[in-house]
Image 1 (cartoon, rainbow, N blue to C red):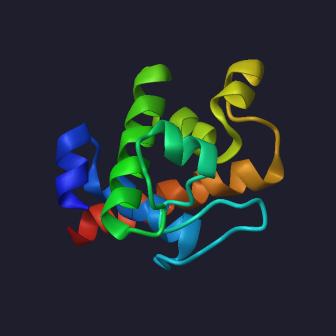
Image 2 (image 1 turned 90 degrees about the vertical axis):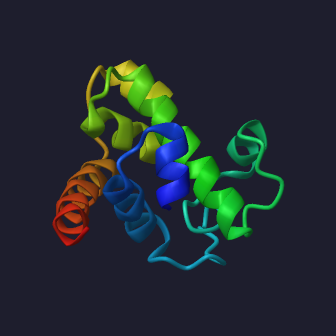
Length: 123
């Protein structure tokens, strides 16, 4: 986590929070929509990020870190919008100009923010 966070300039507490919210730290997690591994990468996104094996812990964390770094860049460093984009996709955030009005995404954004603060205090 620390290596990927450092490589992409992402807060390690944010990566931990995303992992916690996405997979509860289960490296073999598969969502009903097909997202895989710790950071719950969709196969197409994983491929775009250079992740050959989404169940390889190092590749998955590095891919997730690269993706959230991209979302942070695309949304001007706004963690709320970046985490919303991680959950609902950047197109949804762009369409609404804010956190989309999806209950799942709104709960997710709040949960990640709460977990991030907990991990930040623990680190």
